[in-house]
Structure formats: C-alpha cells, structure tokens
Length: 171
Image (cartoon, rainbow, N blue to C red; front, side, top):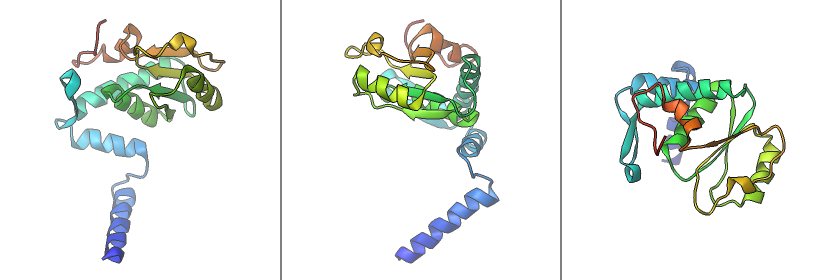
C-alpha cells in the first residue's frame, strides 16, 4: 500500500510538472487563476468577506505594480507580519509572481526580534497589521528597509484601488 502511494504521488508530480508545466510557484498560481476564475478562493468570516480567484488575480496584479513602484525587483525581500488575513495571500502571490522573496514573520515576535530578522534578511519592505500590543516605531531597522506598510492604511489601499473588491478598514 505504501509503495502504491509513493508511486501515485510520483506520477502526479511528474504530470503536474512536465505535462501541465506547473514546475514553479508562479506557474501554479497563474494556472489556478485561469482555471478557477469564479470559484471562491478564501472566506474571511470574522470580517464577513470572501475573495474569488478572479479578484485575487486582480489584487495580485495590483500588488505586483505596488511592489515595483516601491523599487522592489527580483531577489529583493518583502517581509510580512500579521494574523491570518486575505492580504497575506495577496502579498505572497505577488511576491511569487514577481520573483521577490517573501519572508513571513510570526505575529508574536517582539519589535527587537522583528528588527533582527529584518536586518538578517535585508528586507526592503515590511507589511504589518496594526495591533494593540505592537508598536511599529519600536522596530529599529537599518537600510535597505525603506517602506513600512500597514495593511489597513491608505498606502496599502492603493492595491485595492483598481478593483471592485473594497479594501478592509477605513480609508
């Protein structure tokens, strides 16, 4: 039984990579966008919102442009720290498609620990969620980090500006 499962897994991987051409994250994301346009990608119940693959594609394209406008290019690092949210998938997919390294940070890190990881990874941008126990001003960083982007800020709202999906929070 175990041998059959391994062989089945190997055949599925071969089919996905070589027959369908799904040998990179970017290709898997683009394939999903095309195949499942009208299907729901994610439901965020606590905010009473859902996102289809089509909406995620539009938001991802806008996020790629946003990252380019901020000067990020292939192999740069974008850091992200926030509790579970739709924006995680938007930023993650944009980074994968643009060749930018996505570095997720746990939400329970202290400002000093966040600064340490930002320094070690040489991140150029940090996406973060405002929360009561976290003060972004306490994060002491050195270059190349040049941008702090709060997820419910006017700056992040630029990503939502060209789509029909309303941005979360106040603008």
